[in-house]
Length: 293
Image 1 (cartoon, rainbow, N blue to C red):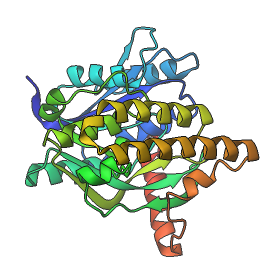
Image 2: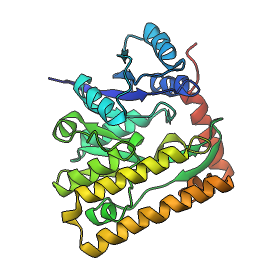
Image 3: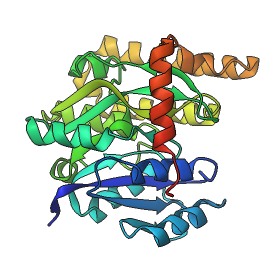
């Protein structure tokens, strides 16, 4: 049984010592206060676990889970689903920052609308919390858009009903693309009632935090996912999709060789933000990470 009226925030951790404090602080500073924060350490070798435990001592709503193992993200996400006590579960990564009203806005939306999940648009930040772009997502999520590789659901912006997650667990073989596999599987099963809010509710750390190894693993996993759902694709599209992955791998290798990897982030985001909007965004970001007095 899960408790109603609150949100379980889920943050898996692996070697995130440089950003973890800001991520946790942005949960503490939420305008919505009925939450628990589950921090699951996945065998970190840096100071991440120590930082998490320091926050746990200060706030009874924070729970740290550590078994010393490195089981990878999909396994940890399934673990958090089982551990969560509230009827809603919010995803977040250990290097991102929540908008101060994220939980309130998303919670109110699910309470008042017939959806199982809600995600949002985002602001992109670099390793120093500088705003470097935004991604406004307004197109609906469809089977065709997902089969075309257009993933409009930014995983760490997600708030979902626990009951939905209990029907739709993560595939533990889909590391680095576990979200894409989950969206595709659930929509093919007619069980993806999701709304993507155009309002940016997450500061998403991309620039300076992207590695070639992560990208190549995600492409390898995507090949696995295409094989898994091959029967749902035409033969022509299946070949086209795999060719697209092959081309992406070569582009990534070339861009990292040339030192131009940040192009991959910039092409996904709108870099124009008006001075007025930028001032507003910076103000909310400062409020999100402000330490407790």
